Length: 178
Image (cartoon, rainbow, N blue to C red; front, side):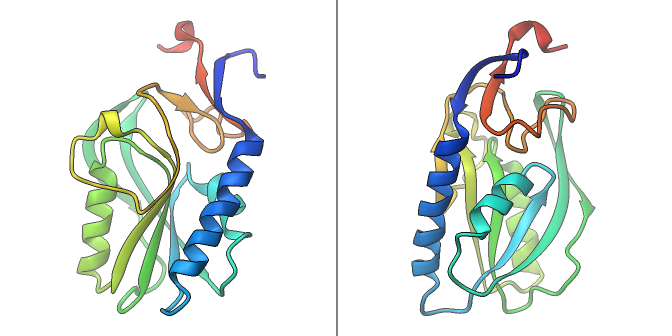
């Protein structure tokens, strides 16, 4: 365990196993409809996307959006699009791939934008769900793990751009928060 981590909430082995289960469930859910375009939200979702998509048993395409609503440990409430999709989503089924559903503001805005661009459907798969922090009505369709209201890092999640490369999800020691 990294010396800055107070505790591990979700181990790497748990993430791999749950990614396999989610992929199996989603493969089945899309059996009789057009496979989804995976839209990963940068940067935090990349490790989860990489683990999850290799277990999908369907032909998929992947695109990326970069949206921001955080400074440090707090959501600033303003969702900014830093990088939009590289392709049209008109008529597509979208599966948003997210690292964590927290306040829900980012996913609500992104979902609305994708529907405005002509998406046929928008569903959400997330590694982590933190329902205690929800400020808007957003529910992920596929959830890896429900976690308590603690600020987490690792497996793509960061604190001021650090700790994304940890192979697990953990909580930093209190004294490290500025």
